[in-house]
Length: 430
Image (cartoon, rainbow, N blue to C red; front, side):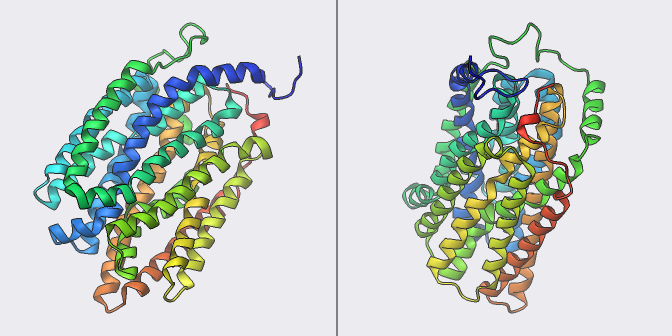
């Protein structure tokens, strides 16, 4: 048999393709839940001006509402990793959809900003392990060298949710209002959660008896977290995840909509059209990044290129005094294209530990990413509020924000640049 497509310690290409086919229905159920979570995570930026107007929110208060989702999401990561490794991704992801549905229902009924913030907390809990749980399952069903490719494909499919949270949300707001949109999402999320529980299995049929089924004690789980934090290079990976992707999420998750409304006077549908460009570029970026590590046999240098490219987009954007709308669209699209280098960071992190710690290392770096996002959203809201109250024009205030995001992105890349590479050719599952 030809050895082409075979990696050390991994199955042959035909076996790998068979594993992919067997994983397809599982991946479809997981991706659907993930897709829906992307809609309610990112719809906020389209409807942010309407929410601020209805509840009379300042930029700082609006940033607090958006950050509530990400603070909760981040806080849930370590518990989620322990639960996934202890009880299995299928049960944990399905159970968390109860909180997502409750959050969507509460958002549709929220009488005040406090209630809407509470809804964001529930949504953060509901979405906390959709991606990390899916990646844990991928490590059990797929060869190690296909991990980044699968991650990129899964997030790219979730990018359909990004697209649905742009112009379609804008049209939906005009048709039934943002509250009606949350109600529709609640119904869809409930159905998707039930289907996931019925379709997904934690282990493939060819797994060895008992593989992945050991429920660790709480003491063992705590020791596992400590073991993750001692992995060589983990703190540099945590740094890039806390300072790289969050500069994208801060714009996409909250401030892109207000920027387009304040600086370019776009209505919800117009804002949605621009954000659709970003979403389409994000999908393309995920599909490009996913297989690159396997093709170039490096992870570190792909991540560095993506992080520096993202920082450069913000740096150039910050120098534009009063960009025309077409130039703003160009930069927003480029930010979407460069940003999904985190799919390769996940693969880099997974290679540092044994299979039994997969859930905990993925959720540990997820914690860093979303804590960074929550802090940036909160702080950026206060920054914009202070600048505007001090007489800065909206355009000038957003330029300061973009410059700050560029500095943070470059700093994360500099810290990560000292980490040791983890080529896929040397990645043998332990």
